[in-house]
Image 1 (spheres, helix red, strand yellow):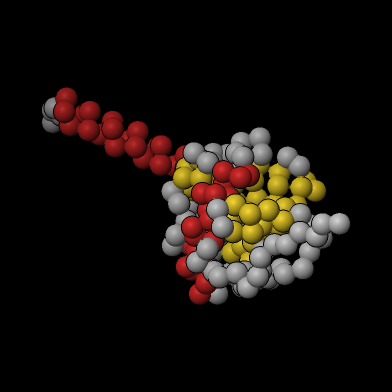
Image 2 (cartoon, one colour):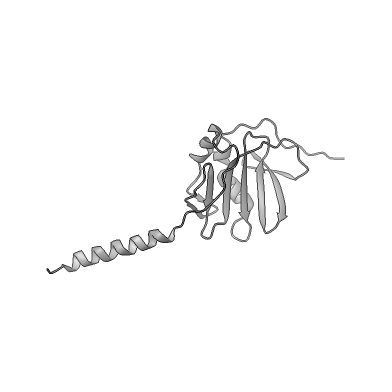
Length: 154
């Protein structure tokens, strides 16, 4: 049986496509305790395909997101709401975030006064936190805030 060059080229293309698909591994994450909260579903359906120029990855846990190869940004919805904290609070595109820099160069951001809370972990060597938070703000705003950051000045 003789195979045409076109058929051979098509088979080679399919084999290559199959091998490339195998390279895109699923990111293994742990779901947060309240990840089945309907508010987390609202965030999940609004997650962008790119964050800080990094492509979205497939995750294996409910109400999570990951971007970059290797993974440089992780999102988890379903954490307990935080309304009082000693962590610094910043606002990015209308969302208040608590900033935990205790594991620099990885920064952990927790949405402030939103129930449930959303956590975003950013490898600052690969992406700027402010850009990541701005790119994710439209999704996170689907959970209303019960209050906003405040600062005390002397």
